[in-house]
Structure formats: structure tokens, C-alpha cells
Length: 78
Figure 1 (cartoon, rainbow, N blue to C red):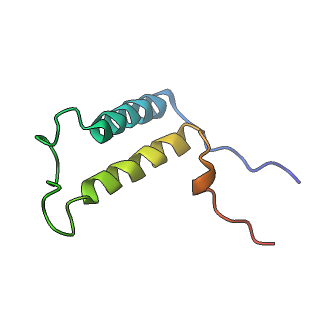
Figure 2: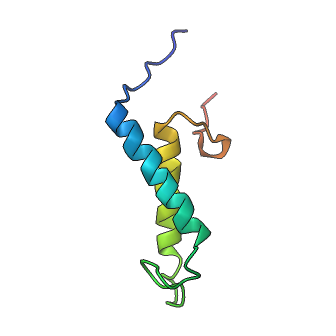
């Protein structure tokens, strides 16, 4: 069975993915202790939406960079 073609990555795309991934890591570590947030956590129901979106963005960056996360793989049909 032939291997599926890898999407072509550019140097610019790789740099953007690395910088974005680093931003996501810093945002998730929360060095400002909650002073700077896109959506404050104190808001009911939507307070943690920004963290969820940042995590999705981080996982997308890792996927673009070719880093495989086993939990994000689609299940193969048998």
C-alpha cells in the first residue's frame, strides 16, 4: 500500500506554526495569573472557552509540524 502524500510545508508556515505553538504554551501556563485573558474564567459557562480554543490551536500547530498525538488520531474503519 503506497504511503499517502505528505502536505508540503513551507519555511514561513513552519515558523508561524512554531511561534503560534509557543504562544499557546505561554498562554496555557498563564504567567499573568489571570490578569490578561481573552475571556475571563469568572464568566459562567463560557469562562474556559478561550483555553479550549488555544488548546485546539496548539494541537493544530503540532499536527502541521508533523508531531503525532495518539489521542487525536482518527479511528480507522475495519
